[in-house]
Structures are given as structure tokens and as C-alpha cells.
Length: 330
Ligand code: SF4
Ligand code: SF4
Image 1 (tube, rainbow, N blue to C red):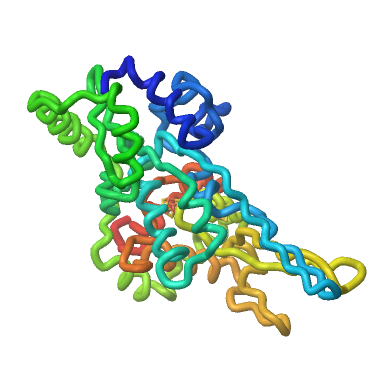
Image 2 (image 1 turned 180 degrees about the vertical axis):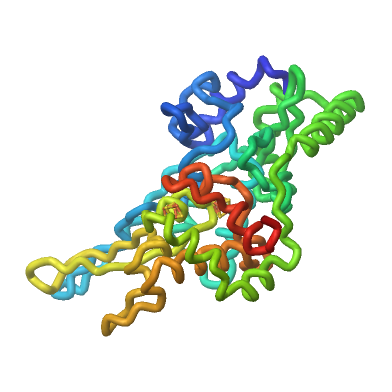
């Protein structure tokens, strides 16, 4: 697709739902509704809040109930959306979310939103906080509908799903056949991009290193700096812990059930009935988060190397630095 066709192509995506793309907001970037491609800052490094916000709401009503009427009404939205400009690391994070929320016992709230969403990936260049190459998440093989790789004056577009194929067919006027010179240009661009990654994290044996460092002083050192604010969980594309609360009305018969994202860095995360807390100290909570992120979930890395937790930590706790300390490299 030529670069000039991008605006018209994005306009046409309206057919598939409300379009959201990365928009510059002050110092940061955020996925917001857009009407034309020029509103997007497609050369962004990362958004503060990852695309998980489209699928896991900060707070949502699951259903309302009334015991007297035997009523139970779920609140399911069904708006179609197109999320344009997602980077490979965020695509990987959504693949992990899909495994957790869809594979065994599908979560209907997540499922409905995922089915209603079209994901369009976009190539990116790393900054000094990106270590997705170390995590193996710097190139999305699947998990998207379409993926646009920016070349000199055109895009090489990959199709990743039947939905993506349908969009490409219905918009065929924007696409040209791939020439061998395009493939050569794509190869060179990808080769160059591979060399742009400067931040590295050795992940071989990391889970064992973390287990062996359970009593390490490193945890106390960083916990002393940590404010326990939970921002690292909020901005992490793979953090997904949630809490479920029943808000009962004054009649004690009716009310609503709410689900809200939770944070393992907050003290009450480990609090259970009877006042017992599984992780009462900040040291335990910090160590738990690093152990969780440094391990596999559903056979996938639980950290995708986006760098958000380092960039947005108000205490400047550097994720890679902590793990390099744990490995004894620093
Ligand atoms: S963002 Fe930083 S200060 Fe806040 S809880 Fe996470 S590590 Fe601690
Ligand atoms: S742990 Fe940090 S670097 Fe890893 S995915 Fe979460 S926010 Fe990104």
C-alpha cells in the first residue's frame, strides 16, 4: 500500500467499527478515537495505558440483580472497534490475555469485546526502555488482523486472520501486489531494526534465578524506594488481576456486581477473610511482582518487554536493572 493511501484506507475502516489510534496527549500517548489518520502519532514509542483497556475495563458492572423479582440482567456492550497502530509487544500481551480469558473457561465480557475488535498492527522502533527483543516479542507472527510495516514510501501489509483477509479484499483498491524489490526493502528494514535494540535482558534461567534469590537483599533495597502506588500494574499490558464486589442496595435484596482491576502492589491485594494477608509487606509484594513477571504463563512470557513499568514508575524503579541485580550482573 502506498503511503498516500493510508488516510483513505483509515477512513474506510469506519465500516468495521469506531477507530482508535495512538494520539499524542502531552508528554505521553494514548489510544483514542480518531476520524482520520493524521490525528495519529504513528511514530510513538508506547502509550501509557496499553490496549488491554479495550478488553478489561478499570471498573465495570457485570450484572444487576433483584432477588424479589428473581431478576438478573447482564450488561454486555457490543460496539465494534478497530484498534489501529498496535505494536508487536502489545499484540503478544493480548495473545496471552486471550489464552487466559478465552481458552479454558471463556470470560464472556472479554470474549464479546475481543470478537468485536479488529487489531491492526504497526511497525515500531525501540527506544532505550524497550527490551522486547530479549523477550522474543519484537515481531508479531500472529495475533493481529492486519499488520502494516512502514517502508520508505509504502507499507508492506501482512494479513493475520480471516477478518484481516476480508478487510484486505473489500479494500483491494488500496493494495498492490508485492514486488521482489518490496521484499528486499522489507528485509533490509527489519535487519536494521533488529540492530536498533540496545537494552537487553538475559531471560534464560530467569525463573530459577528469581527462586534462588528469594532471600536476596535486592528486594528490600528496591522495596524501600517503592511507593506501593500500583502504577506498574496499571500500565502493564499483561497485568490482569481483578476484584469482584457485590454492591447491595439499601433494600438488601437488589444490587449490582462489579469487577475492577486490582494491583498486587497494593496492600489489600493479599487480604482475605479473617484479616489474614498473604503479602503484608512491601518487600513481599515487590518480590511477588517480579517473580510473576519473570515467569511463564500459559507457556508464554508474562512480560513482553514494553518498558512501561520503568518509564511510568514514580520512584524510577527500573525493571531490567532489578532483574540484572537478581542475576548478579550488576
Ligand atoms: S510503580 Fe514503582 S513505586 Fe509504584 S508500586 Fe510499582 S514499583 Fe512501586
Ligand atoms: S512487566 Fe513492565 S516491561 Fe514487562 S510487560 Fe509489564 S510493564 Fe511491560
